[in-house]
Length: 442
Image 1: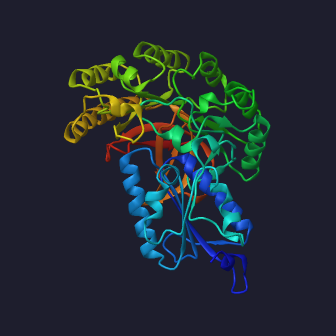
Image 2 (image 1 turned 45 degrees about the vertical axis):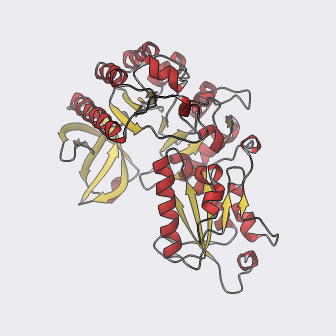
Image 3 (image 1 turned 135 degrees about the horizontal axis):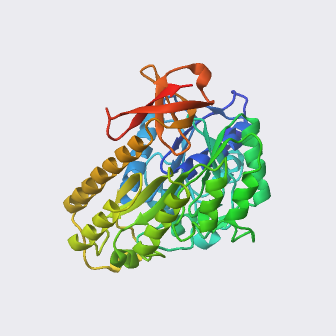
């Protein structure tokens, strides 16, 4: 079967990619794709028939696993003659389950996903499942991707050493490791040469950057800040205990690092935070948010929260709600707790029903909408710079300000991937889950 891909007598072979989950997955799929293109494969869209289908999966929750299974079945149905390879976190954690799906030809774990091009072109017989144990996931593989919104996602770090009680990521991606600053700076320079204006620094636990190379996250920021051609950087999710005052003050003074922070709180109850094995308490988190707002008053602050964690009683959830109600943030990302095999959280006796999880999620999402509207309204009549994106919808185009306010204006192809000075005007509340602000272009 594999020899088929090592011969181009009948023309080049086609490949399609299906990515689920986080931006890190998208960056890694992009790197796998580049290697396949270099080997002569031709990309086709997911709606077209392909010789090879590569599925990069997520496994952050049981629901993510379910979505991956559904996607795999759909892909096989649409491409009955294709050679189907499944990789990613779900593949690492549950390879036997995936291999049992009729139509899946190979399951490739975290340590071998970047070898997919070599696997396809090799004459060597391979097992259907190629998955190393967690301790074998040691190399750092570079990855960078772009989307149609002009942003580039640069992978700077992978893996995690934290082992929070509810999380399987350390088992799916291994221990924390990172690229070298010199190599990442060169990647940023390559993005600039391609005309990229904005880079999002991505990883699993990016605040631990440097531990595998004897460098530091702050050193990386200062090095990237000097790269000519890149106008904007955004720091993706960073643990509050790893977001130092030094980093906040640096962002406050930098012209390139945007006033935009994403912090995983997970719970506003100290008791639940202990059950989760988080490394801070609510007082520390509140002080961190206060520090950001003091140094950068217009900063956008997004926060992750998990509802329905084992042990989260109604009283403890109310503590979370009241804590967040009094916190100065811009948006919540709300997740329902999902039981994951092998995690310590399963030892906690108290469970929360699905209906109660749904109700708690709704309460926090309603609170998030109020906070986001307030934040957007605070930006009205202020000057800003918008990086316009290529997406076109109903004669409109969109972009984001420095502090991550979504702007909208009439579509103009000449504006795509350009920075434009605007005045932020009225807030468009047509879709409460997709707030936008109209602009006056200058």
